[in-house]
Structure formats: structure tokens, C-alpha cells
Image (cartoon, rainbow over the protein chains, first blue to last red):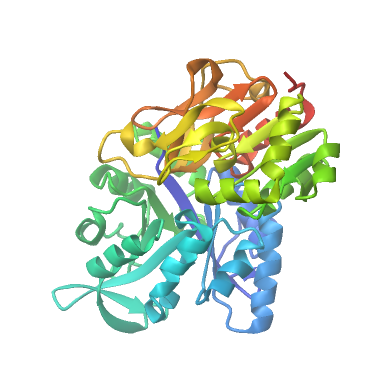
Amino acid sequence: MITKRVIPCLDVRDGRVVKGKRFQGLKDVASPVELGRFYSDAGADELVFYDITASAEGRRLFTDVLREVAGSIFIPLTVGGGINTLEDFDRVLKCGADKVSVNSGAIRDPSLIAAAAKRYGSQCVVLSADVKRAGGGYHVFAKGGREDTGLDAVEWIRRGEESGAGEIVLNSMDTDGVRQGFDLEMLEDVCSSLSIPVIASGGAGAVGDFITLFQSLPFVDAGLAASIFHYGEVSIAELKRALAAEGIPAREV
Amino acid sequence: MIAIVDYGVGNLFSLRSSFAALGVEAAVTGDPAAIRAAEKIVLPGVGAFRDAAAKLRETGLGELVAGQARAGKPLLGICLGMQLLLEKSYEFGEWDGLGLVPGAVRPIRDVIPAGLKVPQMGWNALRFTNPSPIFRDSRPGEYVYFVHSYYCDAPAEYVSAVTEYGAPLTAAVRRGNVYGCQFHPEKSGPVGLRILRAFSEGEVGA
């Protein structure tokens, strides 16, 4: 039985992890390699590295870090942030990324999804969308959630799947940071009929939120979170044990 | 030395890094002399069967690798690299594989219940059905990472492990010195590294 995946997301700026508190047995919480290994050892099923750097120098540091992570942590790695062209795909895939997540880049140029899927295979193209309730439905937001594109989320995600995206990350801006649970209503409305894997993001505040997510929405394949893991409120090992205890297929290490 | 065959398909970074982490000498190469000189061969691959089979044919590397395997050199195909070991694939048409393992590559959609997603993407457990030395350090129920939309339909005697995805899907094959893994051992954490180590260091001849 395939397991539900738990995916920590690390924001990286100038080669360093942006958030993080002290973890027992971990010297440098800001090191993507150290933190990535810590999560991997705890049972993270994948890692997402999100590059929030703006400068060219920061980009170079990011790819150096990525190479080091991919050379020492042998679980799937997804890279996002600043992916606008096929050259960007190439740059991170060469440094060991397994999947590449596009968001604003695909909104600017929707043909990017199909072009990347053709060149690298659908399994490597992740469409990530920031979604918020608007106009009686759901709109897709660009530029890290700062700009309402007016695009209907249901339509946008369906187009993404048709264009060859291999996986969808749906981030709810309405629940993001609120820590009261994933946005079950939005996930149901936007992606219950997709035939590709769906990763839910935004709103996780406790172990119970993952249990509710997987029990209520069988079509959701994975849960992604950042701060609850970084601030140590939820440990991945503990979360995996809790899922398994509830009869949710989970990989324990 | 292990030759990781580079025929222009897929991302070989993790595979090379995995062997490096194990302290195993491995080279990513498309050089026939290096492949002939290697003690063991790994055939990687992602993407479409037709394109990969065409590249193996155009470069002559398919014939070389098959010849080396027939002469007894241990060969491990990974993901699409495993599917290429079979006789045929029915992925968008009908294409010839290397024919080192009997059987054909078919859509998993044909054998799994509706409602399950394709590709199978994620961690699933191994169940062993026939002995294979690459699993000498593995235990039943260990999880490995899969990404695939097609599966190897091979005679039971050549299937060494299956995974349950609505139906038992072939996870690994073996015919003598020829091995295949549908999953990615280089992406399956310590469990995957143990499998690569067993192939690298173990007695994996016919």
C-alpha cells in the first residue's frame, strides 16, 4: 500500500535556511544540509527547498547547497522558487533536484509546463499554486501571494494537469499561517477529481491536522508544512507514528 | 568499477552520489571501452520507453550492454532501465527492449482499480517472491520510492519482489546476472543504499 507522504519545506535565502529553532542534536539549524539530514533521518518522505533569494550570488549559493544536499541525502528533493524558464529547470536538475516546482513562472508563461514535461518528463514537473477565496470561487495568486491573477483555481489546476504537470501543490492562503488545520473545503473543491498526486499545503498546526487531512480527503497524497516542523512543535517521527496508529499508511523509519 | 551507462536519458546525479556515499567506485560513462572494462553495469533511465530505446540503439550502447550481460557481467536496470531489459513495451505503441528478461511492459492502469492515481508516486513496501542477492540486506515490508506509470509483466519465476498498488506490481526482476528495480534505490534512503551496496559488493553473477 502506498503511503501518505509528509513533506517539510525549507525556505532558503543566500544558501541558509530562513526559519528554525534549536533541535536537539543539531548544531546548525540554518544549514540546509544539516536540517535536511535531520528531517530525512526522522522520516520525511521528501524535502522541498524553496529558494527565496533575489540576487544572482544567492542563486549560486543555492545551487551549491543543493548539490551538497543531493549528494548526501537520498530521498526525493523538490526545488522551487525563481523557476521561470527551461534553463532554470536545467540549472537545478543538474545539481541533483528530482522535481521542480513552478508557480509564478507558469502563470507568466503557461507553456512552460508542457515544455518542461516534454523535455524532462511529467514526473519532474510540479505545479504549485497559491489559492485564495475570491469572487465566490477560488483565485490563483502570483508573486508569493501578492498579486491576484484573477485566474480561476479549478480551471488553472485542470489546465496544469492537461499540460503535463505530474503533481500539484495546493497552498491555501486563507489557512496559511493560521495553524487551524488544512483547508479541506478548498482542497475538495479544487482538486478532488485530479488523476495526478495532490500535495496539501497551508494551515497545519498539529499532528491531528494531518490525520484529519488524510482521513477526510482520500485523494490527498501528501501534506506539506514548514513552520510547525522548523519550530519543533511537531516532530516528523512522532507524526508518522500517530498516522500509523490511526491506520493511515505511513512510512516509519 | 561500476559503469553507470550515460546514454543521454535522465538525471544521474543521485545515482553517482549514492555510490560515492557507499565508497564504491562508479563512473557515469557512455564510453564503450569503459563499459567493457567495468566489473558491473548499471542501466538508469527515466522518461519515455520509445525515446530511451532509440537512444540505446543509436549510440550502440544497448547492444553493447546486452552483449556484456549475456556474457555474464552483472547488470542492474533501474526504473525505465529495468523496463528496457524486457522484450517489449506497450507504452504508446509497441517497442522492442533488450530482451534480457522475458516479458512485456504494460500500463499499470490496466491492472489497478479505477480511482488509484497514475503514476504510482511515493513510498511503497517490498514483498519478496523469489530470492535475489541484491536483497540480501533487505527485509520484507521495507519501503522504497516509486515513480512509474507502466509495470513489467514478466513470468513469475523472474519476479523477485512485488509491491501492492491495488494489485501486486513487479518491483524487481532477476534473471541470472541481470537485475532490475522498478523503484529508485538511489532515492530510497538507507534501505535503497543497502540494495545498491548488495549489488556493488555482493556475489551477483549468474
